[in-house]
Length: 206
Image (cartoon, rainbow, N blue to C red; front, side, top):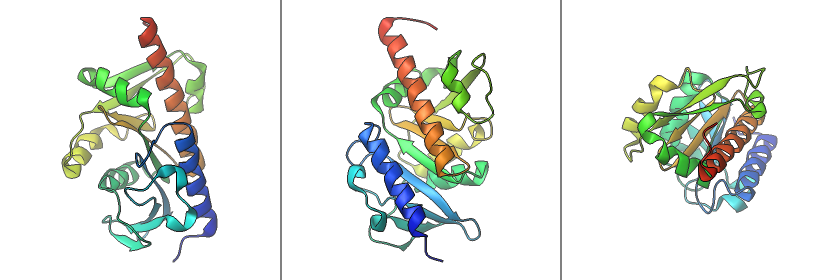
């Protein structure tokens, strides 16, 4: 079943928007939307393309094994991580950004295995959180070029992660029940990461 034009347009617009915000420069980042659950079928950007100019007809369709079904170009090696997130969280969309904030903070705090964020009003932008008087623990996993090993590393964190995790020195993965929620979670996480970065620059411990 071919992907709907609306899905293609929505994902392409989301990717271009994230690029304009400086969160996926050049060919960085990878993004997908679940088009079909059984059998699993993903709509995603092909690897190695400029994310600022991705058009709807340039998106590819990928199956549950990460194999390209339709479209030109290959699937990112990190498709394996997208599939892992979807299987364990029932996410409808996964967005992976490479912002400077996420990349640096994930490396700075890697030895702690997570980044604690608390007390900010914008935490309420994450599904299920209704007060700023709370804290989240954003998991941080070490980077690994072996995607099977990296997938196994993130798996234990997925059920409790606050719709996101960081890969050390690499960036943020965020997700939601659909593309709209995934975009919101991505924006909230990136906003919170920027606050953490500014606190770090100022020498403030919130």
